[in-house]
Image 1 (cartoon, rainbow, N blue to C red):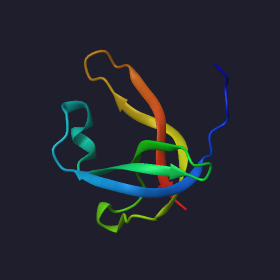
Image 2: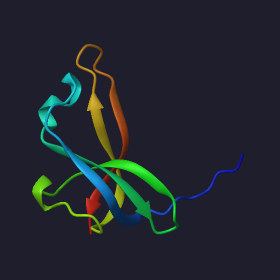
Image 3: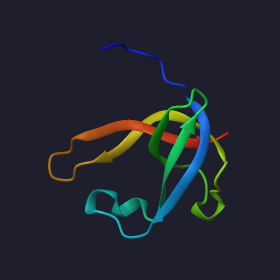
Image 4: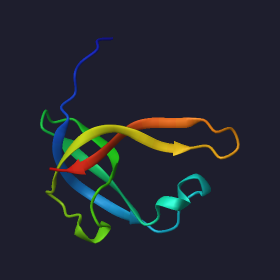
Length: 87
């Protein structure tokens, strides 16, 4: 195995708006989950944030940021990961 640096900018290939979420994400509804194609050709899936869900479009340029994903209500454990923000 080899560690490589993935591109942090790319575009939205396809997306969906989540309106019915699991309990630990219910406070974020509605939210967008998208398949992204990064500038280096890799593809990943991430939540698109800091934009109205109705404004997200295929081809929209985004960059990845490391942010809080969710917090488990029972244990208080906080999960972090990448989210996509418009550029």
